[in-house]
Image (cartoon, rainbow, N blue to C red):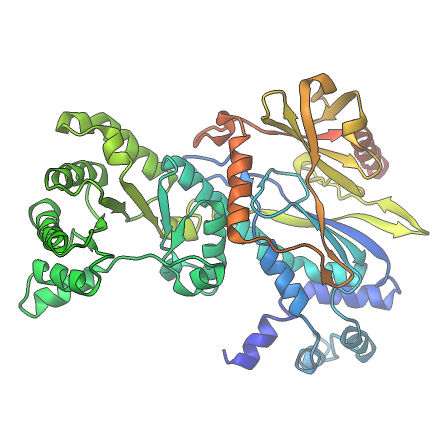
Amino acid sequence: MNSRERSIAEGILLTDQYQLTMAQLYYRMGMHEKMAQFDHFFRSYPDYGQHKAGYCVNAGLEWLLDWMESLQVREEDISYLSSQTGNSGEPVFDEDFLSWLKSSPPFANLTMKAIPEGRVVHPDVPLTTVQGPLAWAQILETSLLNHLNFQTLIATKASRIHHSGGNGLLLEFGLRRGPEKGANAGTRAALIGGADFSSNVGASHILGIEPKGTHAHSMVQVFLALGGSELDAFRAYADVYPDDCLLLVDTVDTLESGIPNAIKVFEELKQKGHQPVGIRLDSGDLAFLSIQARKMLDEAGFEDTIIVLSNQLDELVLWQILTQIRKESECCDVHPDRVIDSLVYGVGTRLITSQGHAALDGVYKLVAVRDNAEWVPAIKISENPAKVPNPGNKHVWRAYDQRGRATVDILSLEEEDPRKMDELVLHHPAEHAVFRILQQAEVDHIEPLLEEVWVDGEVVIEIPPLERLRQRRLDDVSKLDPGVCRLMNPHIYHVSLTEKLWNLKRDLIERLD
């Protein structure tokens, strides 16, 4: 794909065909300027098979806004659309529609609200709401989901891995295994969700952090193939990077060769006034080898060195490694905390691909249309009650209990403010018989979650730096009950509808049945 082709594929035509055919239908019916509201939300947490998420981390908004802000409909786009023909051989898109599309600035009259990036989010809660002319709001759907679903998925995975590793330093190594250019988005999401650094040089640069890495087995193999030794390879690396020396020690034999040779090189560095960084373990029983490596390094006087673990790590594997270290290390005369506190985790494939759950089921549903200056709620009926969206123009709130813990996310109609209600009757979004009554006396505070991010063709928020997004995640995760953060069978976080919204939803369903 050349640069011209790429600009077409990644521009306004980064959408599904049916978005454009629907837009033409709206244009033909005179409905294209009718104001509509769509909600973007996901239906369920990622389920990885042996374990499941109890929360998600919102991500991707900045890159979506950048894409929207840079767009224009160009002659190349119109030329391509005009060349499309249907089964009859007639053009799919008529000249008058294409003329309107060319002359209409993309997303100029849209208003978008969103839950800020980095915040913890839950199923059925609108992460993004879009109000604006029907045709353009419809065209936006595919790219919005493309930008937001993947980054939210990867940020969630990174947060779980970070939590499982006892909040130890986490390095993202997924560029070589990621979905082509989408790996850059994955790197960004991982850094929001819990990764401290990445090996991805370009993405690290634009995000304002230093890339991190060690060396490959191939470096040692080259020296071996040319008649040298593992020790020669380590010495060469230390000579070039004396203050950043972190050696991969499992190319030959980890305990008999790799670590002893690394210690020799570290002693030589120390004599020259340099401080070695540590070693990396990429194969074998990582828990056992970590214990042995820590003991050997400490006995050699290198207590400040780190041990980087890599090779198909994820949250469950890390949990197993740390559990084994806690059980075995004291038998080897090493305190488990001594081992665990020195560990750094390099996570690649299973993070960048969200192994076990490869896609977030985020959707974009019409919930209201404005008619005669009034918003008319819209609803989609499904045999599965969980797939019936919550209608109308809504607000999203988060309530905290007296401990300061997040206890429920509340969806209300636009005119409602739960902060002003003495008693909240809260309904399950799908199960009509399930409700709870929340007294204001039980609540520490309630905060609104949605904020305006795009108004009339412009970004209206200050784009926060990466560090602020990370801090949002840390703050929100710290306010979750520990049970919600469990790796397996997490406690269910409550998402509820106000009674007024529930009654509206029920009435619309009954009217259409």
